[in-house]
Image 1 (tube, rainbow, N blue to C red):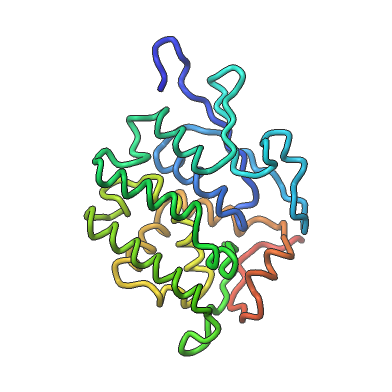
Image 2: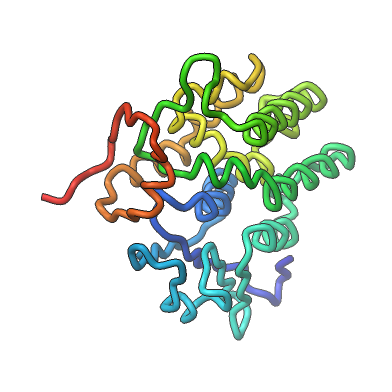
Length: 253
């Protein structure tokens, strides 16, 4: 929290390619939607490399996202998305990073942590690829593993619970917060994998539509489809034998 003797936070957020990086989207969208000033710094990926050692220059783990708070000397460095969110909640108590109501705040924190730590099958079988549209399954949901179906059903259960319990339009109530930012990449996956929304009920589908209409999401998608960098291993994981219905990504001239 800033005081009269402490300068306000000044943030640099290190991210990578918007077409692929779900983790980059989460703090970027939260900062954008809560109107917290920050400077994004997009760091290119070395293609087909499991590690990005050049990122060690700004991130102890050589991963993104990484937030530098330069209002401190030396700067505070936060190299995990959940740590970034918790720092923002402390530094900006006037912003609805988490809800003010204790029940809603407890639920939002738990749901945010569940996304941070879980949904492994969705991550593996529905990788983020903003500009692609692929057929998710054949008739009667053929090709969807029981484990993946169970995780998608859990997403529907969680979103529906939050919307009903706290009255919407966002997962923990009237204001967009960290829990919504953390599930925004899940919404984009529902758009990439055509047919995945069939695992969602009516209320959760309405939530998907609201997230896609956010200005911060629209801007992210617009930037993502302009990128010409390709990550072949990531693309292969997205397609994985599925039919490609559309590719909206720019190509090199």
